Length: 314
Ligand code: UDP
Ligand code: MG
Image (tube, rainbow, N blue to C red; front, side):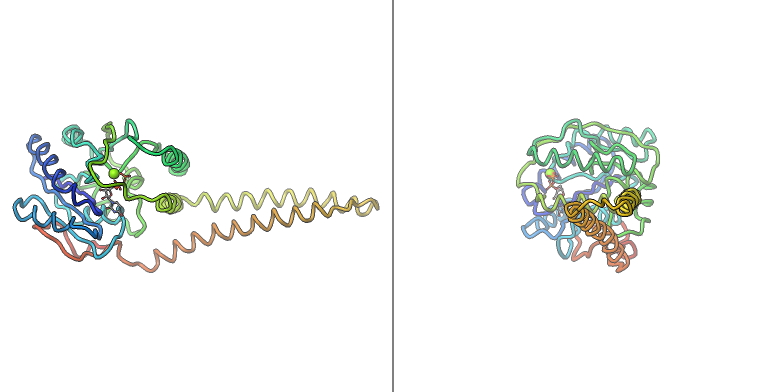
């Protein structure tokens, strides 16, 4: 059986088309399947739609969060309640084309344990969005030493890979990068991002920036190393400048370097604050992880959920 995980946050118009189109394609692949909708604390009738559909079609199943926990939480909830031998994660606004599914399943049958969906093009976006995504993925790719520029959350994972992901203890996850991190035999499927069916994107610019910073720092300690490196540069600079100042002082022609003093104070002061901020950010992340809260809280489920709903919430 194949489980399809569909995170849905206020997607009432997209549930029915998603069920129709995905079912049609998967029926053609000759594989049993379940469609697992994770309603991420939707405030519209998304969950009612899922429930209605699940009553007439027992392959449709739904999980409803107690509030909005974010797409990452929704994906991990889907992974923990899925029962398939393979799991496909895709957006329920159908921006991830259903036409790519047969190829993904084909590659899985041929032995791939992780099939990554790779974007040929990023679809319609604002220039600002495209540029910031470019910068973010540029940095992320450097940090984790894997090219992430065209990766997405559209993936197929074998049960082995799903179990490996579920064993990761951290509550702050970045699915897209973790699926690289766990390794396994990987293959790729290329696809073109489609237009969103209806409704609008759930991401605000602020939300995206926060997402980018959190993910970059949850995957790398490079910013902390940069602080140390800058510290060393400052020390070298301090020695050179210190010697020069002392020599001049003893030779009796010390410069009246008031400008230099002000500049140095400002530069070093600014840099110290920034370093404290970076270190503080990591401490905040540690604090969050140490609290050990669950990634999500489930309010209700519909349909026969095959996975474990208890032990794996964290
Ligand atoms: N989504 C979610 N929780 C959120 C935001 C989004 O489950 O807090 C889901 C959303 O319903 C959709 C998918 O994640 O199925 C991708 O979201 P969206 O289409 O808004 O992002 P974009 O495609 O613009 O990157
Ligand atoms: Mg979308």
